[in-house]
Length: 237
Image (tube, rainbow, N blue to C red; front, top):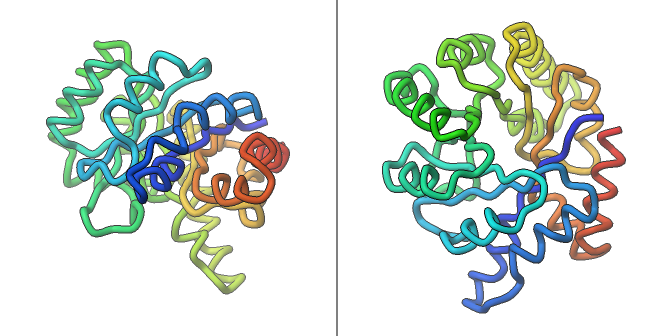
């Protein structure tokens, strides 16, 4: 069964909306782990719209599974990550006005910066993943950069309304995942996945991890977070 990384950013979104001390992302992480999460994922954005620095520090001390820190190619965030040493960093693109990450990292454009960053993280004992579009060329470039993992952006697949369009995007994901497996990369996938569109992606056996956040937190409003995580874990099987 593929592993499940639970993104708890939107627990912090709710807290920040009112400037309160609750709901607490740390508590959410512990409940998600109880529900079967194999990894806790947070995105420390440059604008700090949800997760804050102190959240990540507390999570690093408390998470019993693994902590995956999503981050942009920002000197400030890089310094922070090297200090707290999460188990994994996932390098993502970031725009100030976006509602959520809109696509994969432009690996070709940032190749030089990545060539410097990747070994600095790995020397600190931190695994490195690139959040990339379902593009075989990007997979090959990621391998050349000697990263440990890739996470395939599934947003374009999730946004399609027509069966033929979904099938086309699913095939792109399948080809990227196949190439990643051939190159001995750990292959994850995520973005826009929910309780009715994830199962088709789970049929791609090369994908060994799914990172899912918004839909799990939304489901938790009705059934509780532990149950919402258990339900998603069941879909992955």
